[in-house]
Amino acid sequence: MRSLQAVLVAVLVLLAVAATTDAAWAPIPDRDLNGMVVQQAGRFAVLVHDITRRTTLVFVKVERGEMERPAGGGLGTNYRLVVTAARAPGGSRGQYECVVWGVPGSRTSTWKLLGFKAL
Image 1 (cartoon, rainbow, N blue to C red):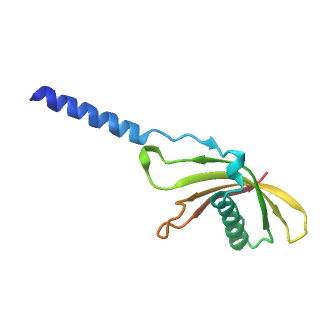
Image 2 (spheres, one colour):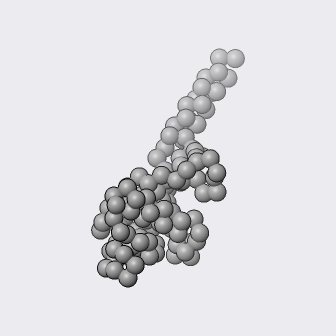
Image 3 (cartoon, helix red, strand yellow):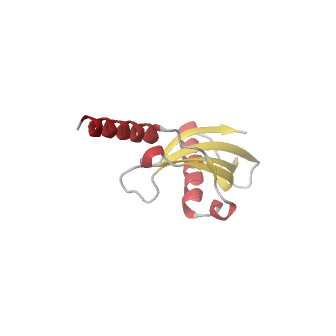
């Protein structure tokens, strides 16, 4: 009986360690860059930055990106994107790196802008 308890404790410890292992960033394939979720994340980042910083940025497109799925099967996905945005419609363009967290398709978990900086 004691050996069974020891095995169960060892298995639980291994599961806990596996669940807390850091997730790795993975490149978003080119074919998915124009997908609805990635484009929405890019638009969201520019819009929120524009509203909170009172800038005149307008989303143009997502250039490239990476995504990080939660370790241990948690909720939400981080998107690190390089987006092109224009100062105003037809104005000068620049590239920005943004980090967005969200749960695609969720009606209860809202998207969050975690970072936004000019490159």
